[in-house]
Length: 111
Length: 115
Image (cartoon, rainbow over all chains, first blue to last red; front, side, top):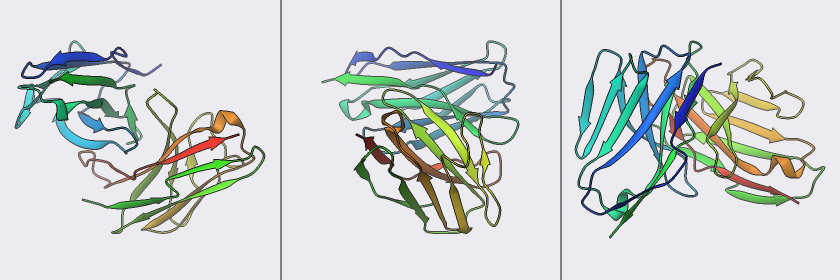
């Protein structure tokens, strides 16, 4: 069956460090992968989309990589700040154009 | 972009009753979806709300339990029927364009507690 996996354990890092979150998938061949941020009591907010022919995508302090051989995407936040504390979700579009989400990883940035 | 108003934002309901959640979008959108998010879990797609026709339900979700209406391109409702405590969850409305590369926009969610 198709599966999207993210580390369920919270990631706890010191302010200023780089946070790296992982998204692994099986039984998909996605052309695109998306990352979202979700704060408590809010709906997810889109951050970045990366295509299968793009190895890396950047937006300000965010960087996403996409390795279709490993079936993995890495999401990096450089120079992390306490305001970056949230849950980060990766999402893939399945063959029916429905967006399927991973379980999310909670990031906590300590001041 | 799209701005989504979802209401109610939260409710506490008695088991056996039904709750209807409304989703209003500030622009016409092709695709509208309903998700459920149980505590500490990811989003699970319930159904795709189709304008002018019946919704398309995902495995494990049925129309009798989660009837959906979509009378036009800016509005949809999801009803949670004959509720039990297992229905306690956050319900989220989402929209996006029909191109593969378009991002999804979400309402703030409805936190439902069934007692």
